Length: 461
Image (tube, rainbow, N blue to C red; front, side, top):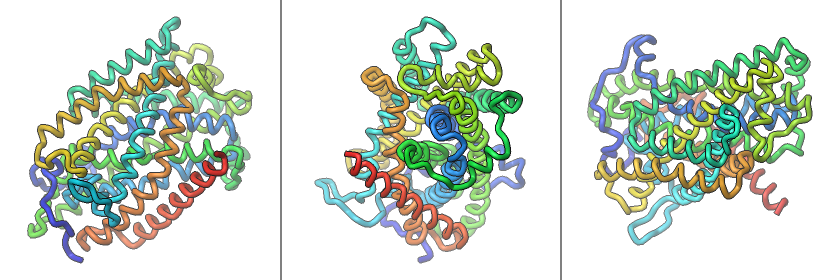
């Protein structure tokens, strides 16, 4: 197949930007990065601060290899799924709707993958309640005496106000500051740990790379895989940030354009650089939290839970940098969780109108209505998630629910990426055989983990 297999025109939401030649040289490419910053605001968040640290506190160093796998195995899917969206003129959900296996509705048929994605939508909102609740708990560290429920309410309103604008550039600027502060604070705590009794030794690292898997931590480990690195929600929302940055429009979607392939390859280098930046940022932020949890909390026998989740996690800073570091941890935790909430809600808001389009309830060409839905969801969803936290003030539990549902969605995304590239992407723009082979390995790994999660849930029930 030499052309993009579709019976309709490119989505107007995807092709808003004008065709543009790709930047030349790495310095020029760096100027066109941006989706990595927004997605890092979501990636480096609750999974790293709460779930990753909790796994380190529970299992010690023994699952370090698992953390590396969770961090690195999904970035290739991120790059290849974005490759398809940028080159095809499809949105993420429109791409999924091309996967075989139709379910007939009154307004037409849709792929089964959309129904599964829709089912994962609700647990995702539950998980966001855990993120806002954790941010509220972090704020109480900075303002002693402030009730965590009141703090969460304030942050929910603040998040809604920021997202009301629906502006990509505003998100990019806000999250850049928050992510930078968090990353520097985390690295400072990790480096300080090396000068205390909790320092990481070579034998500790060697123990963590022996591929030993203590089964008593299976559920938490699966939740960590689902949440850490580029999770299922971020794989999908990353494509929307690429759209709003303008990448698909810069490439163009006219298969008869003689310069399109050359232009596409140039913008592909920008996209790949953006993905590598994401991977570098999340690795620098994720591994220190796991090692802090294993080195400090595990050795002290402390486990984050309930309303004391963030307070317990603060010991990773206070026992390495001193008691005064409680303020630093509070500030870092506040930044990471708030940035995760802003980026998470903002990304999901861009998926919602796409659901309405694919199910036939909204016209594809009605960009005004799609932007209105983005703004409406971004304003309302933080308040709903706040309510869920009030009903169950357990950040670790809420985050685990969202992460585990995301783990079930991962093999669908990697499998759909393989099918779409093979059937619907121009031959000249497909990935190398090595990349395709690695993508197949990742798909089989994620399918196996999803099956394991289902069997574990059934046996526990």
